[in-house]
Image 1 (spheres, rainbow, N blue to C red):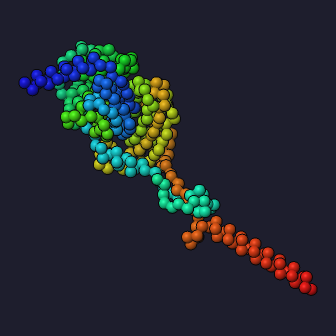
Image 2 (cartoon, rainbow, N blue to C red; image 1 turned 90 degrees about the horizontal axis):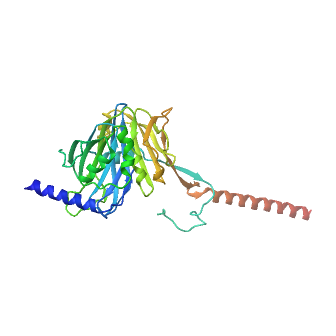
Image 3 (cartoon, rainbow, N blue to C red; image 1 turned 45 degrees about the horizontal axis):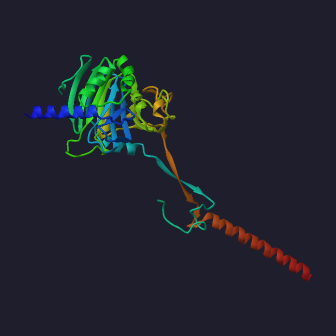
Length: 355
């Protein structure tokens, strides 16, 4: 009885999705599609990538905003993938490991916030569902927290689209064309239905991280589907490898910026990614003001040298001596010297006149 009810609900959901036009959004590693007229946007995407030369692991976490009770997300991968829930604690560890260094830089002359220019004080503020086409294979399906994950193979982009739509994923126009290069390379796909188990809950805030693992002889981060995004995209990558890593090209975005580079000894969830061994961590940020210009997936390579880097934030501090501004002491000393010189000159002139 329960199976029949579940099948009926799924059929109604597929019918509803097929009859409505869904606005599409994309994130840095795949396509995010809300249900019906609902809206969903990826406010922040953070991914941790571990590559040892043979296997790639990607742990991703999304911060989303919108009113969608359900959404779909698809990510192409170059090999057979396993999917499990990731450890959210690793993102806090990475924030700490890559924190900037704060240094004080003294200045001599007063600035806007210093006296006498300002009198203010203080700081500023499992099983396949029916409907699979012959050219689509279901290699696994599982429920992970709020995620319904299907791992697929496909030899035809239209067949993949049809299968996903039949099973409740309404894809935007043009996605089949963007999927074709992956089909030609015989890539596989991780398709995820985001559906909170709590009744009436919408997809908003920080979602549980997902960990995807697959074999690969090169470090690749799928980006091509982000061409479908209608708003500027932001990508943040933490890369754990044997050497400092860099993108081979900007793939149509702004120049990637390294915010941290250095060898680290991971703990907790990060240690599970590296097998408890030290690794070289490279943190990379990149902006895509015009997503339609994205031309390929990111391929990352080792740099010529493992040069460490940590961002330094300087805090300006007025130079003081014994708590008194040095400029004030200097000005006072100059005034005293000038007064003494004037007094001496005056006395000499008085003596000369008397003689």
